[in-house]
Length: 387
Image 1: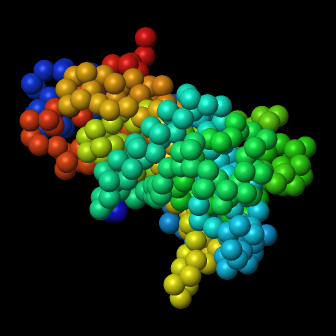
Image 2 (image 1 turned 135 degrees about the vertical axis):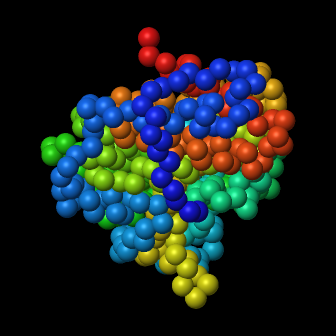
């Protein structure tokens, strides 16, 4: 996907009207893309220290990271074995299910934990996942979405009988038999990235324990472009590690590329899939490179993924649908840039997000509906306007 910088020269914010003037030229009538020359900036004149700059390099989407970690060796070794012979282990958990995977195999099993409510959420996850895959297919957004393979029901005893290792792993935390969503596994970030994250953001007194904790091998990084509250705390985990904007800036990560990818993706999820994107996640993970037709787990590519669709809802192509989309944006974790940012960086990211969101929305909407993404952005500006 080609990358461009989207910075306007206007020096004031304007809350756009929601009447027909919104259908005019975005720069003249919407003026969402203002960039204030604020003295309160979090730019730095000094380059980041070498460890942080190296972390930024290997966290940048599409970068290649070489690793000889035990995970990579196990993946390569286990690739040729029968699935039933490989261990299954828990790699994560969410609101509606626990997630399991099997060494050397590309599948993730999201198993419902408690019963009927989880079953409904898992089915929503499955059906919305499929719909959003279709919406993103053949698009130019620089993002990955895991393949969604199939759904297993309670009554499918034959399938459960064929997966005794999963039964053994899931029984302590799930009420079996349960429904299962089977999808492509997002590979964790490799050992060099994990080590750099621990060295950069973990307290000195916790680093040895963090490095030895096997759960930290299941490392995905949530990217919070809408938050500058990242700090070192007394609790540290690399499972769904939260990387905040101030930390990205400190290391020199290319935040604009992430904002463009998120904006492009959200436009398609809203107006091609016709869903509100409620509670979806954006996380950095990895994928294996290919050598002679085989996956090479010792050379992995950092990628931005969109995942978790269990709360996504349908929207209508009208003001009611816009309102649902605004609500979903506001209750989600702060992945997206926010309007009314206090710093130059925050404003630049909002600009890039808005431009890419409108570009992708306009490509899939007929002229009569192109007012809707503009109303969505107007709703965000109103909702986040400082008191």
